Image (cartoon, rainbow, N blue to C red; front, top):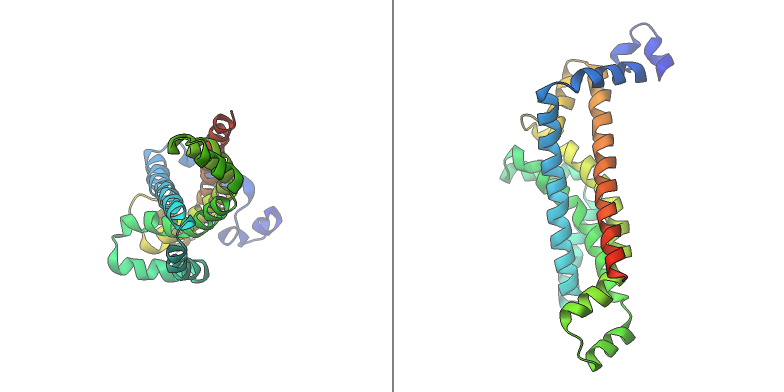
Length: 230
């Protein structure tokens, strides 16, 4: 990358790591940088959290209801197969551009979380559940003592995958919808004006934010797993 950027005229198409890093440090002190990073984080991670809650709820309902699993199977398969750009363009017909990244992030997160949580619930030890019924253990204790430890490993792997998906899909939604004061808007502006260092700097910001949110969220899940295992 550094060699390509050093070629005469190559800097317009490919910035060196040093150029991208310098540009990132130039952006850090500005209020506009933190506003864009905050707006994008709030919408994209908000979509992730909303989708996780909805997916876990529907998986819990579908685990004991085959008709609901059959009802949800086609839309889940469609979300998995249809390109994210198609959903973004369709969603722009009904949604404001400011809500687009939240919706698209939630949409992309739903299938992996729903399917993994459903799998975890379906694989819950039936002998333990039967024992809990025989001894009339309250539902709250059954959920915390049996379901949560069984499902959390499935949920953790799904969340790790979904966090990457939601940032990629959310950033793409912002680039197409162009809501003001977001990372996607900055990426599009950098592309239009051939500001290649800015393009690489904002891409690095997305990678950093995705990594930070993944570490924090998975740490919270591990903490919950530790409490459930006691």
